[in-house]
Image (cartoon, rainbow, N blue to C red):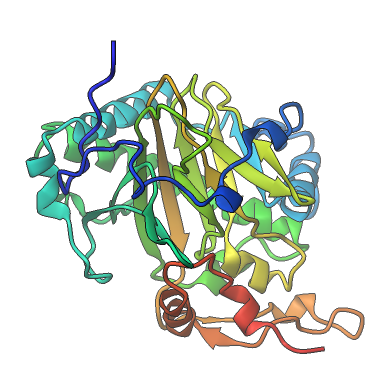
Length: 349
């Protein structure tokens, strides 16, 4: 029995039409993906004589993962399993609303805080190819009220998301502290440098089942532009892949885990010691997939550049200083292509 195609919010059915099929040289080549290797899994309960200062076994593991992969998974993170299940359930319900109800959030205005959109890439000779997914983005905050911005349908969306945001806010504080210490810095350093009023937004990505995953992409290869992201994946469906040494690694969902990935501003602040790496999402033939990313980003006025304590004669600065607004302007300039934003801020040797 054939599946009924998923309808995007703009009422386009997701079918293997030319609008969604990648040029041959841009297809995912799934047979080349390494099945066995993956990113580190770190137990946040691994305290082993952690006095909150300097390196501990936990800080060392996180530091190694940030240096080698730019990605890691965490378990025993303190966010209740039931809460994670509840937030995935309400977000799934949102994507199952009729297209006309989701369509109220469609916009081409980058500055809109609450929006539904579709990723795409532009290719020479073909034009625009839309990715096999739909994305819903909106703000979040651990303590301030943001729920008036959120949908009233599904009915529990606002309440569940507020509870989830509180828990994720605590987790971000802990992660920023551990990553700071991994750089040999004071535990509050990264949080201070990212700024007092960070941009906090969430992105829910829904990837319907695809008849031929070799022809499409759920999300193209990209680097995150903020500072750090906490990603929750539905269990049982693989899709996220990360680049390491020129090869794609699959990030299988681990029960009760979050995927943590460093974004461009952390690479710049660390003067290139910690990595922001390319990642993508492929599609699945049988099952839909959902991921929910919570992002922590500098605000437009924040000045970003390598942290002074990480610079010396042997480690000169690799990037110039810039405002995050300037970074975002460069980001939008590269729209539709494989963006290489942080490279535009590298200092020439």
